[in-house]
Structures are given as structure tokens and as C-alpha cells.
Figure 1 (cartoon, rainbow, N blue to C red):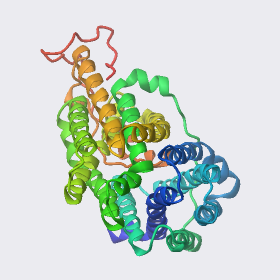
Figure 2 (figure 1 turned 180 degrees about the horizontal axis):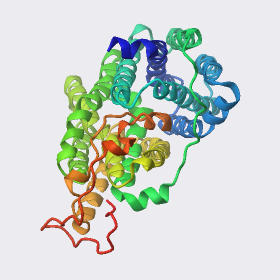
Figure 3 (figure 1 turned 90 degrees about the horizontal axis):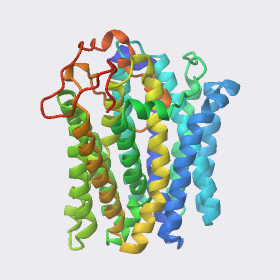
Amino acid sequence: MRRLLLPIAALLISDALLLTGHGLQLTLVPLRGAIEGFTDAQIGLTGSAYFLGFVAGCLLTPHVVQRAGHIRSFAVLSSGFSALVLLFDLLPNFWFWVLLRFVSGACISGLYMIIESWLNERSTRETRGTVLSIYTIINLSMIVVGQQLVNLASPDASTLFAVAAILLSLAIIPVSMTTALAPAPLLRAKVKPLKVWRLSRVGMGGAFAAGLATGAFWSLGPVYARAVGMDTAQLTFFMSATVLGGAAMQFPLGRLSDHFDRRLVVLGIAVCGAGLSMALGLTHALSDELRIGLGFFWGGTTMTLYAICLAHANDRAKPEDFVMVGTSILLTFGLASAIGAPLGSLAMAWLGAGGLFLFAGVVLLLLALAVARRRRTHYLPVVDETVPFLPISFTTPAALEMDPRMDAEAVPEPQQNPAPAADTGPAREDGERPNG
């Protein structure tokens, strides 16, 4: 393990500092917006701008890196992100915040891409899975640490914005001082959503539904927690619990989907997520402790949907198409997140704070109905045709290149003429792989 981690230690340290500062501002900005008098709709729109910026960054970063190289691009983006965080505090104007959140979304996705492409370059076929898992654990852990830093000071003061800016600035140092050779230029993302839709309706539809629900949560979760009476400490525990739930449940649910039709797992997750959403949205007499516990299980269901839907889509694709499939699903998820934030704010305006989770519950219930209908008309895929599940968080196309399942040798050969299950619809007669 030491031999594996030493060559990428600088990158992982920079990543940890970056994600701690990012996790802090991710929770702080909606809280400060509410303090400044922004409406829920306005806070939702700033969240939409962030996710749109993230998508734009995925598409534009390869051009930036091609021009300036990995190290200088990382320094520019991290320094710019640090300045943007301070500007949130200095200029609390709604339209200015929309612009700031868009640019900050582009910055963080660009920083993700640079780190991920570098990690991929420093990994071998045998170590890519381990490196990707370590990277995912660091990301989730540091976001939780960053959220807990909100307890250091009042959100209406400048202190927390300064702390976030310091962490983002410190992230420049390890990457800038590394003696490792920079990787090859980033590849431009290939996006073919119609092709992926034909491969996997459930994969694309599930990613879209997950984006709607989680995009609304990330933009408005702190506002919900404050509105139901949580103090700052309880609010940060609630936000952290959802992240920890997603991290804790992703692997066991993913492994479960390796042994059953992944659509059945998606269906179960959607039903459980819808029930938990309704509980969080409709029950006003919940204690803060119970609400935090429900948040943990809500994260354990809703925040695992993206990775399982991606795995299901990959089951229908060839190994050489994994990056194209993953990029298309990733951008679908990002665009849905941008739509989910304002829709969630409208639900809160009409139904009160609980409208955030009632909106998520309706989305997940519709997904469950769609998957159930899909399973009635399309036969179950043979389990031996599935590729092994690999836990992965919502990152960038560069992380998809680290997927060890891209090696054709690692993917089991499909069985010839698989027989449909007895209780499902008729099998396709044209010899093509069924879409899901």
C-alpha cells in the first residue's frame, strides 16, 4: 500500500484540502443566502447555476489544460475558487451570487478532472480500482469534515468564508511542489445521450431522477434544516449524516445488484427513498435526532442511485464505451441537478420546508413506477453478463477512465442466447442485447 500511495501522496493531500474547503462552502453558501434574505427560490437558482457550471467545467477543462498544463491549470482554478469564496461574503447580491456559483461549479469540476486524470496516469490496470476507492473515500470524508467546520463560527460572519478560502489556497501547495511528471493532455468528453438511452432506459432515467432529488437537497438541505428548527450543530450533523449514509450503503447495495437484476435494486431503492422522503416531508413532530437518523438512511438510498444506474448502463455497453456511457450519464445527472434545485424551492414555497423532501419523494415514486413498468416488458438480464459493481461518487469524466472494468479481459464473456425468465416479457428476437 505504501508503494502505491507514495507516488500520488501530493495529489491526495491537495484533494483532501480542496474537498474540505469545498464541503465547508457547499453548506455555508445556502445558509448565508437565507441570512441575507434570499428566498428559497433564489437559493435554488444559485444551486442550479452551480450544477450548470459543473457541467460546463467538464466540457471546457480539457481546453484549459491543453493550453496551460496540469499544474498551472490546477493553481489557476484553485486560486480563482478561493477568491470566489471570499466574494460571496463581500458581495451578497443575488445575481452576483448566481454568477459566482456558476464559475465556482466550473472551477471545482475542473479541479476534479485534473486530479482524476493525474491519478489515472499514475495507476496501473491492477491498482486502478484501489486508487479510485481511496479517492472516493477521501472525497466523501473530507466533505463531511468541511461540513462540520461550519460549527467554528456563525454563518453570518466572515470567518467561515476565510477558512474555506485558506483551505482552497493551501491545496495549491502539494500539487505545485510535486516532482512527478504531469500526465498526458485530457481527452475531450464524448457525449452521446441518445445512444445511451437506447442502451439503458433505466440507467439514464434513474440518473435523471437521482439528479433531481439530490440536486434539490444539496442546494436547499441546509435551508430545510434551519427551517425545521435545527441549530448550526444539528444542521451540520444532518447534512453529514446524508453523506455518510450514501457512503455506507453504496457498496452493499452495489454488491447486491451484482447478484440480482439491477433494475430490481433500483426499484427497491426508489421505493425506500420515496418512503423516507415522505416521512421527512410530512412529519413535523420529529425530534432532531430522529430526523438526522432518517437523513442517514435517505442518503443511503437516494445517493446510491447514481452509481447503480451507471453500473446498469455499463452492463449493456462494451468496455470501450464505458467512458462515453459514464460521461453521458454524468452530464444527465448534472443537468437534472440544475433543474431539481429550483423545482425543490418551488415545492418549499408551496408546501413549507417539508416540500423539499415531498418533491424528492414524488420524483423517486415516479422512478419506481417507471422501473416496475420497464421490468414487465423487458426480460431480466443474465447475472453473468453484468460487470462487477464499483463504488463511485458524482465526479467528472476523468474519473471514469480509472474504471478497471474498461479492460475487456476483466469483463465476463456474455452467454449465448440467454433464455428469458419465466415471469417476464418476451425476449428480443433480433439477437441484440436488450436495453434496460
